[in-house]
Length: 79
Length: 174
Image (cartoon, rainbow over all chains, first blue to last red; front, side, top):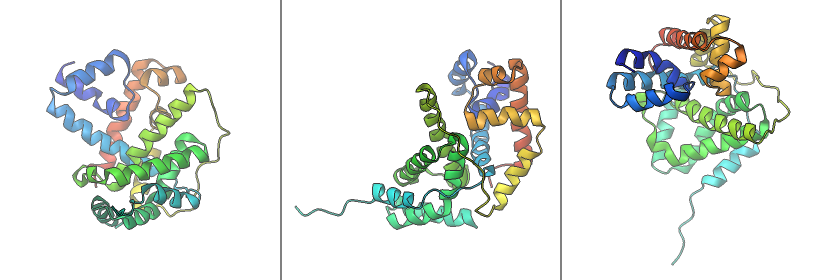
């Protein structure tokens, strides 16, 4: 893949649809192209924002406590 | 703005302020659960994903880089990745849940959400369909071509064109 071809594939790579040889070729040549890396980062951010189009839906109220319990820092223990 | 509030909560999270996680959760649980539910169509699977995402937020808040996008885009990326992983694991076990009804309007839409929704709505139907199979089902280009019974080149062009249009309409990270 030359640089121009690499840039053409970036939007597809960002949303994760590449497969087969095209995917391996893209991944192996990305490191050599700062331009493609910059574009990939910009497109990935765009893909992230696409999630905002989805209608919000509140989870069950109990989930909040599950999350807080799982992450709660351990109280300091006495020696 | 919600993004500023979220960014300041993330700064507190990086300092290990556990109370900030509850506040961050209250702001974003609907967004994360809505996206996970849209992908997984199963309430229990979606809520497991929500839990994983907020645990990841707690553990990796320091990895959030505001120069690379909003906290909401960061959350959506994590949510989509984890939900699609779960979808693939479920598919490999050949388990299909009873499909849940998705899409509620219980939470008010923010401006960013409206802009993204409008940009997607403005895409030609064939481009949007291909993009949604990629985004919500995590299919590869060959799988999408097969699903739509279209040539691979056509599918790639539709998705690429859609992405370029969306970028043109939505611009760089806000």
